[in-house]
Length: 165
Image (tube, rainbow, N blue to C red; front, side, top):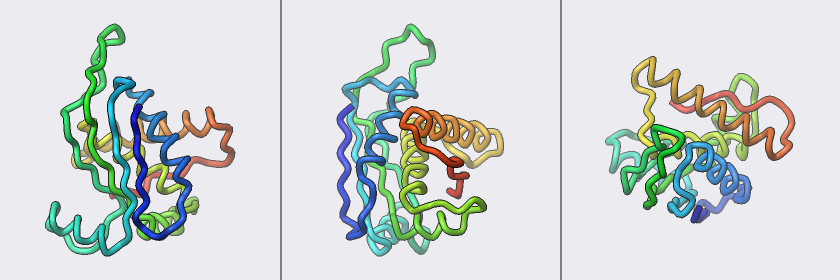
């Protein structure tokens, strides 16, 4: 996987964990190993501008996904996944910090950014959470990926509960 993490936010984050969880999520979803992903970390002002420009909604948000090629996980285990440019995920640590603090279990900004990275990957792959059945599928998959990644990397403690809208 070619994954670039570009932190333009001015906030120190665990870039390695964002990279690792993105790589784990893409592998778990059986995305071609030569596919490309970009993760950009921005401050609240930059995120607010993107949120207004692309969603026509005020204020900063936690994560935005901008798909490029329409890559999807292979439907069958024996299918070869297509290769391509997955797209961009934009994260906002300012919002992540607040959401982590307000979460029922309370967790760190970095844990929230890891969760948001997986959330962004799933959006790039066509998952959504507008309808109750879509929400159940996406958030269930998101939790399974986070739990699997945490277990593989030997991270302890409860996984962060979903806080994305």
